[in-house]
Length: 589
Image (cartoon, rainbow, N blue to C red):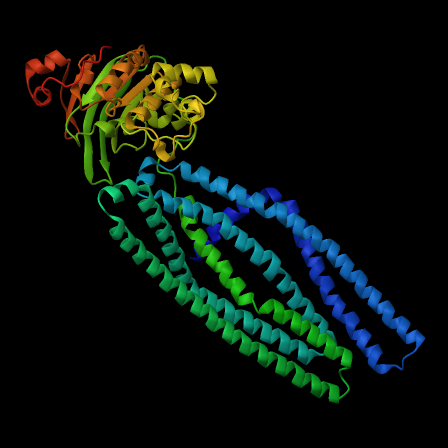
């Protein structure tokens, strides 16, 4: 945990270092206010010494008023400086919290495709937001509580030591003991706070998973089943919260006992010294002022320490992610991919998920510039995996992939994906407007260019039916649109991007016969002059490809044109027969 805490502090420092001057001024200001607070009891000490040791007179009253005005001046100065600290903090903390969110988001987004497939979106969202809140707690407890407490304890001990060594030693020893007890207790309690934080994240992930699959819950009457799962995880969270809160109540009881003891000891010894004329009434006021001030600060010090470590526990999960090296990284001095023709070559490519399940085995495939190749085969043959490898969502176990004789693992990922357009089987849209979703293919495109792409993909026909037209929000993941409409938006996005390499992964699977006819001409225009890879189970959509590559078990078992493969028989001919020659009109390219 200590290592993780150090890593969390490094993350905080990385975000705060742009505000070093402001942080320094804030420390000086708050330190000055705390030091001035320690001076006020000294004036009250003198005030009460005069008050108790003199006969009322004009000159005595003048002395008392002079002290009173000094106290007023100190309070006014403290008020002024403290206002600076509050306004400075109002700028300092929100800026760093925003930077932390941005840094966490930026690093998280650079993780690989495989990273996100193994994690709940809701849990990741929770972890990112916890980081900024954890910093807020850390900054508040450190700056407003522990830092001034350190100055107060040190200053009070020094001042009391000047007047009476024994009183100073008692106060210092008790303060150190009090803080050590709270610190050790907080460290011991931390493991339970960490468990509670993890369970809190799990609760959020469970809730997000259920809400995301609300349609499935209704279709399969899973309301009671999902409620029981949510009840289970929330009960576990409740038990951990109850246990950790009870621990907090116990330590508060111990603290109250320690306060009673120290107040008795200080007053007991003060009386003894007063008997020997070593302390005055003003000294009693001084001791009581410092004691009450410390009690007010120390009462919550255990909670501050626990809050501090709880914040580290909350930040631990995202700290781990931010210290996890990105699985897919650009090599040092990686150059941008330069696509001059669009030739793609897979040479001895082998890939396994989790190093256990081989999906692609020693694949050798060359797609010439401008060639249109279809990949077909049964489920699990490796078709979609080949596409993911080409996009470098995963790194290879062996072999290499080249585009125009450039190895894709030696060029920048951004330039690679800039030159490849993908129309996936299940397009997922942002909960943004249709205009924004289509423009995502080329974000600098004008409205006119977006609308032109939408017309080519036959999106314009259904978009015009919406009251807000292109400003219509599509819902989370595009849920307000039908599957066919989402695919047409994805095709419009690819048309707008106009990359030299095009991948169609079941791009027409959600289209009915009428809709598919509508976009055949759009696809024909989209594929013109490009290197194209098509994945399709509906063989009617690939008859006119330049070449059809048949995959099984991650290997190429046959390739050729539609007619050649039918003449040779084999898996392709068998699949064709099963589809009765295809049940949709041919896609003419």
